Image: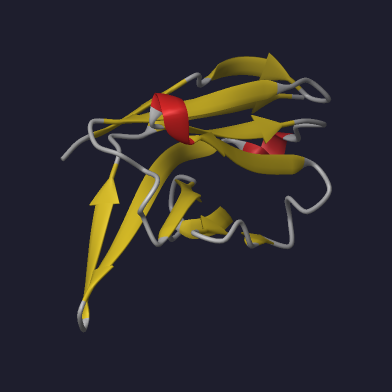
Length: 118
């Protein structure tokens, strides 16, 4: 079970990036997918999640600017980031959750660096 995040890079403030997370398994039956980020010296925080029935949830700081989506046929999900700000600079991690009975299994990608210059 592997998640491979990609698409990070250096961008100027106001610019856009699209992150991708490719899964080595079918994402169709996952209970949730998501993106989290961690800036230096800070705790990992939620960026966006999407449930199995397409309900989305966004961190307050990214609402209206970021969009999570998925392509189940490609076993890949995405984070479209627009109007980027320097405070969006962080390592972004993709996450997948699967519920099996009373157990919750979390899978994480390796992280991709996003740097927004002012």
